[in-house]
Length: 158
Image (cartoon, rainbow, N blue to C red; front, side, top):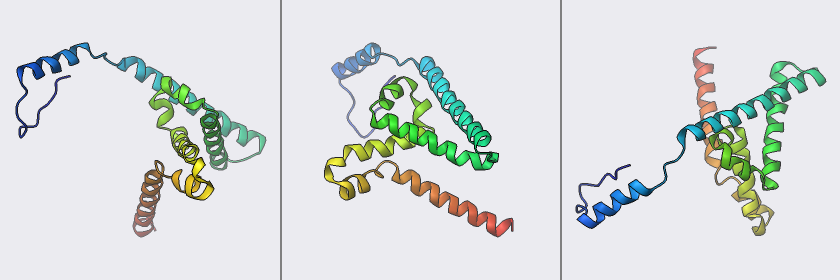
């Protein structure tokens, strides 16, 4: 990986160039294929668990497919939150990578991690206000996007 230089900055000296080349040569290269395969497998595992939970709620509680999706999602969120609270989620996520971080499990992890980090500051000023530090932008973006899509749907489809 070569370093791109800002044309406004002064050029690198010979020693700096040699150092940058040496760092590029000696830096370990991440195992991209392995990381992608693990993310795919763990993301698929989360999806399979979600599908099993959906089928469980459908069969045991006699719900429709649409009705069973909400408790299945809530259960997956609960499991990810519990694993985060127990300190297990981060250990699994080191190997799973984006396979656990991208789905709803990553959202649950970010909320619980922030809440645990600030629990010493109290329930209101610590947990209540700080747990949305990482997830607040996701929630805001989701609500605003849903509102805009709903508005477009209401104007043009109805």
